[in-house]
Length: 272
Image 1 (cartoon, rainbow, N blue to C red):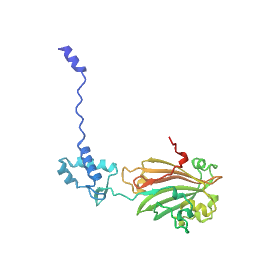
Image 2: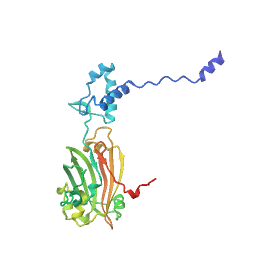
Image 3: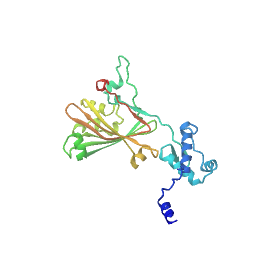
Image 4: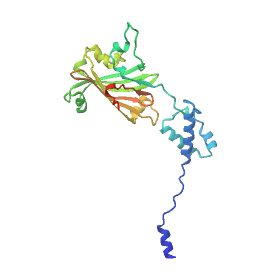
């Protein structure tokens, strides 16, 4: 008997069948209804009392299910309105044409040709300040730390909602006293390339590095981001033939309403 008890003590237990928590199953069903269009974008989710009756669970279980959907960015909650399926916002398609010269953007008047796909920007809130280059910014500009820069903080809106948060810099001695240093001129048609072009500065290359990340609390508030929606973080440097003339240390785009498009020259494509 003692030997049998010893054997039972060290015998591997039989694992219990895995059962998904009830709130997860409810979240799955509500997600299916949203993605299938049974709950259209902008429509209210059924009330907690309706869902407790339908799924025969406690109100707390329904709230846990809604929290899952909110963390995924599928639903939003507003005081006085309730919880609703997140609306589908228009997507801004940002391609290389946004860095064309003003003439190239507007097209050739003789032929009537125009570039397409330009993002709509209705309003830009701009704040300009003179700052000393930090070691990080100095390295990006390839200048000495402490070099005076013009810092430009821009919040661009399109389709009635905030779309882009930019922190960018010019070398101050290059733009001081010019219209390019006047925040009241924003939005500048043609963007920063056109600004530089107006000063006789020819841009020869723009280099971008793009990564995805979760937003900071300040970015969530400024860009009105639903919980769970990531951002695209773009680092940009603008070149002439002899120097770096502009650095955007951070261009923040909501990932649910922006699409970046890049063309790759055919010579860079491996035919195999």
